[in-house]
Image (tube, rainbow, N blue to C red; front, side, top):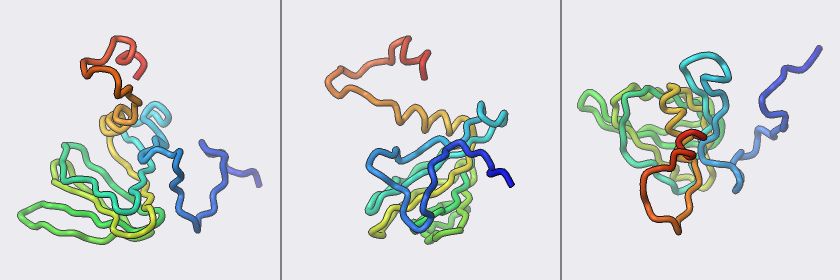
Length: 147
């Protein structure tokens, strides 16, 4: 029987954390261009001791924990609270709900994130490298056209 083709031919040991120093905290797995759809799939890593601060946006997000554990905070319907998500758990964050993440463990947490193409573009943009020696200012025309 032929093997399924995957975007990444590299084999992984599923028992080990998947974060490496050269891997970005958010990696695009399938963009809307790849699959002809308005949803986007990403792999996100929350290193040990890291907090993603409280924020909200109009786009929904669903997180599936691949390895590790992470605490998710949601504030909706006048109820605030932290929940712990472990391997195999799904955390769904509706649009416009304040939420945060924290990894209090000693290991990285890796999640698959399903969200909108707009959020996928946001994650793509925040990963763009910058030169700290250059003064702040608007992006160049070249930067806009290549992103």
